[in-house]
Image (tube, rainbow, N blue to C red; front, side):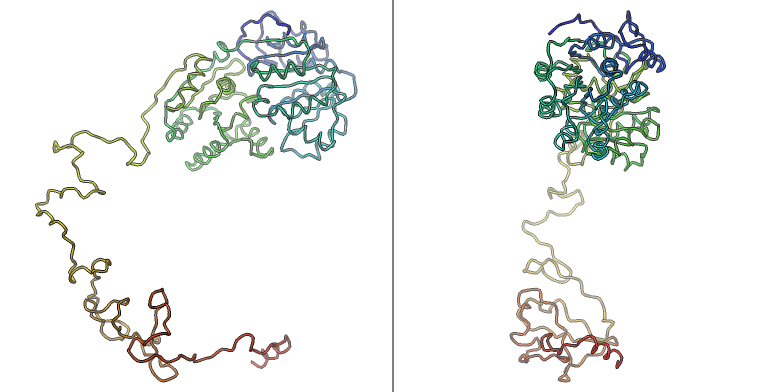
Length: 560
């Protein structure tokens, strides 16, 4: 690979940043005067360091491999030279791949901004969008295709697009695409491209996977590295809060009360994003929205648009929004979870402090995050540790550490009686309980069947004229073998109901197993022999009942 001189970069700026870069002007990049007019109308005065180095090499048709930080203007570094090479030509010549939908949409917007006035047609193909609409756009032979790898492979399998005429391949955030598992899709796409074509790859780092991919699709690329470790976030006030997991929501709410501006919250998983959003809504905080990979495309676009417009003050997202999303005037970035990779920390906090402005970053760290924190501090330097106010311990009382301070009566706390251990009696001057003593109720000794003390049955006369209550202390239990007093069925006036034989009907309890399972066997409760019971109103079975047609039923209704 051809190596160029590597120099440290200045403060990273967004795409086509207005902040001047030393010893560089747009005229020196060799761009077409029509593009220079569009750049001047956009209000950008001079290129960033990565733009001043990548644009001249790309205009010569060479393969370019660029490593630079987020917000350094990499998008304009490949959009402007790609457009200039194909001005006035008709056909699909440019293919730009991005890892996420948001980055693809922003890349397509930059192509539209500078290519639309020159007659370029741009088609954006991303997951979650309508495939028929994308198919219609591809059939119009756009000059530029911006897509995510997965959606482009879907169109290739459906036969909606052909890549035999692509002359310029652009891979934006290549390391991120490989981390997200798009290696097989990238191989499938590159296998259908022509051999003679230009390739431009932009990545945050030159990881081994990126180098292997570059060797496969590039030929003697010009390698451009912009160092960023020591100067990537000089205008961002970084702060670290040591808080346990259960106290993070409270710490986030305190930051929201103290910070009047917009807040970007990052979490490591989509489930954590949803849980944070629900927890804040439970606290009646409604100016919060969220995005993650399971959200529909309409929801993601609407959430970002509402966050930019100020409808929502807080945006909760996973690392899918950590790169490429350009939201202006973000005042505070909160890392609810420390990222798994130290490089992602730089991309996260790069959402604030843009365009020469200052910003704040707060990261929550627990005890288990020591290894992640060490990797981050190795990359960006030490972070200011702010213990913050003391957190309320919301854990269950049994899980809290014991308080071994002496009691007011100078006795150690370990001697106090426990609810789960009877221990010694309290100081109430009662004699010690005899060993093996058992409680007795006011109604006599404790039952031997394990049912506890008897119920106090001094409830007075019954209100339903059924006579006095049975003597409960001496009455046999219903499960015993002794005969029980029969219980008669009463009507609404308290009179006994007579059966077909003229005798009072006995009220029987529901069958609950045991001896009540077969009530028709054995003697009656009053000691008399059991007779076969005959229903007072016998009902014929369904099979024996005569079948009536519709006409008979109607006639029966009229007779009634």
